[in-house]
Image: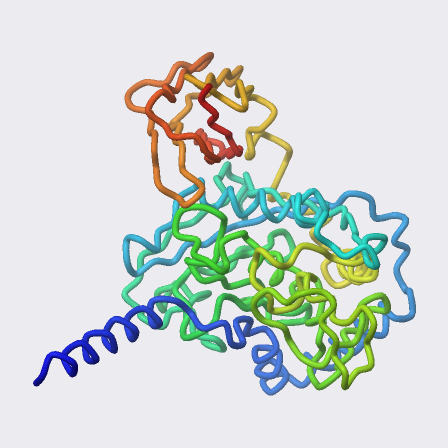
Length: 412
């Protein structure tokens, strides 16, 4: 074999492994397909779905009585390989991302085109890791299950939510939003059940490389927006592009668009078939298929639809006993500073309980500091002299929960 042919073969091998290491962007959400599967399995499911749509369109719910709604979350980590057993800090980074997105506290709302800025919605929905299990016992809101099943989270399968088959049983859907974090097949990043699904499988499945913002989270799904998108489905939002050409998502303030968008389009992106000029597609909406860094808004109409669901099909969450206000997320009990930090970062705590670990991660997920030995309850100093300038994630773990915060290291 001559040298030229050898080089061609080597380049081909490199390209093969390079492309197979990252998921395709095509059809990264499996919710529409799961919806079709559920309709084929249960004729009453479609009847319920249609009734929910009518109730929202008819304004059947008094949204003024809603206020801030808090949803307890349980995360079931199902792993075959050790790398898939993601950290508590990575899980907390996802909860933080959800809370920013659903309260419109994400910095990138400033990138929304001026024609739609008045539609940006604070959905008044917040998420907390549960601190009580289904039996009322203190819990971290995280379960971990090691499995030997390769296709544990296959779309339409019944393994991930079945402990007998190698998965983890659902916690009561009337009290918890269930996430299963595991290895997904093909190009899928995640999928969700819509209201009305079977009670044993009602929840959201996310690939272990698309959950959270640190650790194993991998570009282009490394900002937590796969979960933001799938929670939207769980709260009865449809894709912004509907299910057909110029499809309807049943939200009055989102424009029609011809089909899904991938990557990071430039504004305006016109769907000529739908006549949606001059502003075009709302591709920065969380319910499109763009990359995480290019989706950053819900509309007020989408908020109405989600709150209607929380006052209707998912109203039982309001009386959940999965979270009782004890510090599952221990944010109020810590002071951290200075931020930006120079030579050292000080963690002060008035916690009566022990601190298990304090860890510092680069924005790419590399651990640059980890506490060792006994951690004082009142104060702990992190030496930053050998830490490069940049943005980091501080993770604090206690027996009752975890906390994470963005830290800026800036040496003089």
